[in-house]
Length: 174
Image (cartoon, rainbow, N blue to C red; front, side, top):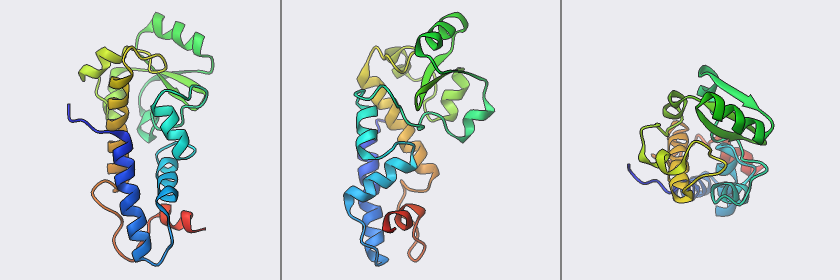
């Protein structure tokens, strides 16, 4: 598996975003760019992203793990973690968080969200994202999800074309 550090991906783009904003005459500091990127991929801001990815935040996981493609796959939603774990135990699947709720998904869902079930990291993480057996493996999976999400936004290969600032730049300037 190609290694993607989720923080490196976000920091690289933040640097590009701030540079592009500067070229477009918008004052966007690196920390503001980091906050905007974190928000674009489903967190409340940069520190929230860091805390969630590092496993320090367990009350609100953000929305990164449930993208637009999620609705096209069968999944079971549950607000209570203990009940979600019991459902996963009875029905199989993988337990993922969404903000303060939980969903149990099939392996096909994972591939659509940049983390195919065939990856060896899943054997290390286990079937419960909220209680990983191996935190480093979960971080690597987060890295794939972040990189894939940014790529779909057109942000990994470079900033927006000159003269067309992205929504992140426009929103940060407000």
